[in-house]
Length: 519
Image (cartoon, rainbow, N blue to C red):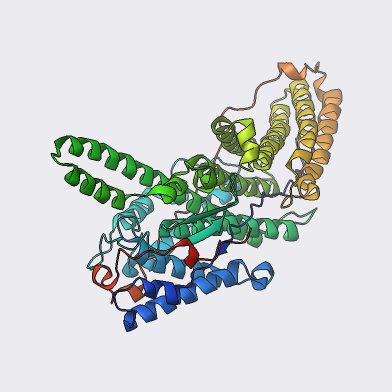
């Protein structure tokens, strides 16, 4: 078939709510944990953490934060990096292990800046990307892995997490039956900040595509690259959170196993109690443990299945952008496998959630709309894949089968339309959901008319039933690869502070020291 393909380059992305928090007054509460309240280094540190915390509120929860047109993304990311680096000192290097050192930040940035443009460019040549066409070469991955293996050296607080669980934090939950969580573990604060950054990337990406996509010309290339980068960085964040949470569970299990073995060797109850106390200090405790392990009803935000689903959402939405660009380059063949893989990505996320949560639990944990959205996306991209497969069949002179395949695409899209209303929520309007279907429907209709016309003039073939056509490929082509999250070094404000000698680990904040988060 000749001619230019109609452009399918319009999107609707799912927006999750941000987690809200009750801000801790570090200037007074951190000093309360010190052995000497007048310590000037602690006063300075408390001010640095307080200022960084204020900056988080400024970029995520203020009136300024709602003005996405004028938001300074570089400053927002810097605010998160600074606050996380300061939290790193509170968390301790048993868990908080920076990815890179100051000397190789530039090298790591060069690796991170490597985009999938090379894979995008393959579409111009109507080629399939080869195995060595990953976003990063194996050499670059080895270099980044080396960064990941580096530990903070010459750190007098190495391994210390003496005050990790001595403060108090309160957050709302995006998912789960409980609307808020309160914990003494600084990890909850750290992971919530990163969770919010991942959600922010998704929301800002939706803002760009919904405001800058033209009904006829699609998304400008500069915006496409920006959104693509944000989505892959978001995927990196959720992947990191998932691995961090699983590592915590693994550490807890290992500690429990070691505890059982050693308890058998202990001869006195006093020794047993002391050992159990030491083990608990290495992992997570009580409510904090339930929250971070995703085992408590209030902690669904950090459930590994949910974090994996959010990761897949990011990868799927990034993959959609590769399809739009392929359309603009008029490359038929890659679109089929790209669309198949996109549908598979969303299906994997949907199946994970459905298999992990019962229908009642999906509703109880506020996941029903998200699952409906994933189902909508599966159906949409299966319809697109069928439409493109019809093009391929026509090109190989399978005129009758191509018509049946296109009719199946038409039928699949009608099924997709019925899935729109169940997806509608406060953050996802019916109009947004209709954009891609309204663009795809005339494309399929035009394709079918063209195929039928060619069959009359050239093919003269009998059109089989849509139930008798070739299946879509079971596996597709994935171009979208996550951008690994770079964990910042512990902030230099901690360099002059010896945690064990400065803080009283027996002093802990109480619930009364923190105003409950507003729901």
